[in-house]
Length: 171
Ligand SMILES: [Zn+2]
Image 1 (cartoon, rainbow, N blue to C red):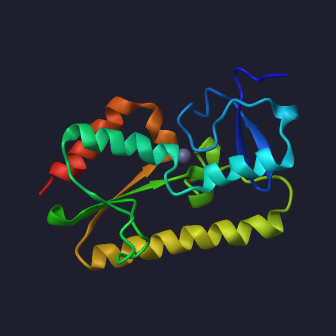
Image 2: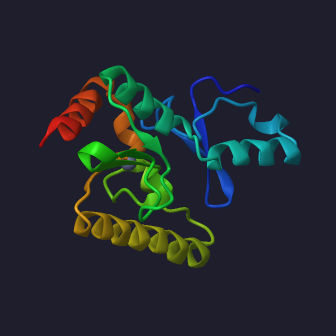
C-alpha cells in the first residue's frame, strides 16, 4: 500500500509516521514510500540517504542563499561543528539542523522523543544538543556570527529567505 499523505522519518531506531501537515515535503526523512514493501537493504539505503551530509533541508537553504547571490564554502572542517555553510569574508556561518537529531525544542513536533529505548536515545540526543551549543559558543567567541536554520522552518520559504538575507547582510 502506498502512503500518499503520510511522511515517514527514520528516528529512534524505527520508522515513524509523521503527520504530513506537521512534517513537510522537504524534511530529510520525509519520503513517500510503500511502507510494507521495503526490504532490509532498501531500508538501510534509505537510512544512508537520510543521514548523508547533503540532506534535503540543507539543499533548500543552499538554493535560497545561491539565489540571493552569496558565495560560501561548504562544511568547513577547520571550524567548530563543521558548519554547513561558511561565508568567510562576512565572518558568518549557517547551520541547517534536523529537528530530531539536534533537539529543536519541546514546541517542535519533529523533536518528539520516541517512546521506546529512551535510555539509549536520550543521552545520545542530549549529547548532540550540548555539542551544538558548545560549537556555537566557540564560533561566537572567535568572532563568527551564527545562524541556525531548523528543518521545520523550511516550509515557509519566504520568511526563511528574509531571515537568511537579514543575517547575511547585517554588518
Ligand atoms: Zn523543529
